[in-house]
Image (tube, rainbow, N blue to C red; front, top):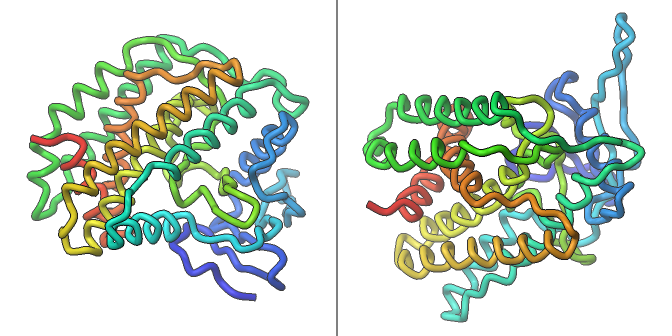
Length: 321
């Protein structure tokens, strides 16, 4: 067996070059959510996720069953999503080639297909969606504003970048969370690293949800959150390449990130229209973009300090002074 060699909150190992065993960081990591969502999506025809082969469970004295580990089929030739996206963008940049947004478009199409499957009824989840109530909308807004306040409380030498943009972030959160929206099961932690390129195409992995729950209204959430998480990660990819090329191509990378965002959104909307489902709310997307940048900065503060530069650069680029 061998490790994956990537940053994870769980422990995953490849066994026999055939399967991946994912040991959960805690037995109460809500593994049931992941399995339920995957089975639900697959029941609705979504096949772009590795096959779940088995789970290791434990039943406690109260009769509750906890999932300790999952066994997934290994995707032949699979690459880490972050590594693939960063290497592809850097190669095009250094070769002075056209940096198209084809990868972003593929991500938008895949996200739309995933949402179309998650938001339809199945024998696994008979009633997956409902309309958000005014109380739900207020909870989403208050959750976003709370994250902004926590982000502003971070003590760092470059914190002035965040403070200067706080009014725009607050406005996006408040303006975007004023109307009702459909709620349903979503991925919950969707980013470039969860899209795995392999010999058979592009698959979605890791349905555990974010390390810190994103849905203040329960297990259901707005699909626009997944969209914002994916788009935010596109800006982070450009920020990583900017850091690794010592800022020599900052203008081109900022322009690429902006065009990649639009390409992703166009492909996502087109995919939803083809499926007959309409979940994309533009103002709510902007609110979740602001919130996700706060989440990235808080994640760097609590877990991965060396990551701070990426969301900070994305914040500078997307919200220029």
